[in-house]
Length: 136
Image 1 (tube, rainbow, N blue to C red):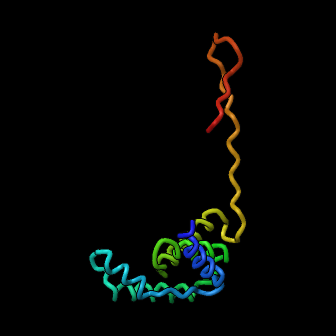
Image 2: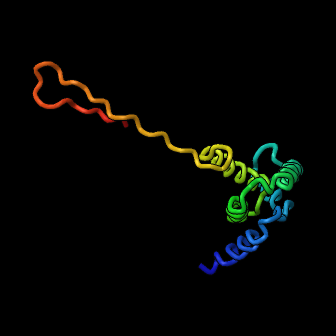
Image 3: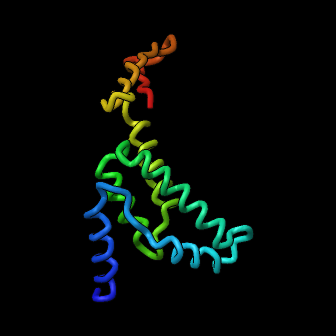
């Protein structure tokens, strides 16, 4: 439990400043990426990707809700050096999920009513009432 305290403290500090794009140590992030052994992923390309993602975040930051910003900022600060690319990806996914569940004006999409049960007639000579088939 004591080992988690520094992580929680750092994540809390980052979340508290979620009204603006947080400042990450891109060099630290890219050092970790460079030693990962992913082909074509050197420190220079990593830093370029991180700066591009930061620029996009600065332009689009206010389009994300404060809840989305806080959750994603806390998420990317956990488990290793934080990344603007990961933060941008998290925010885009959160936005897309929200848009799937709203009508574009922020109103929840209504669920369509289930179709009415379809009564069937019993075959001639069958005993008992007709069977009702309920759609799934």
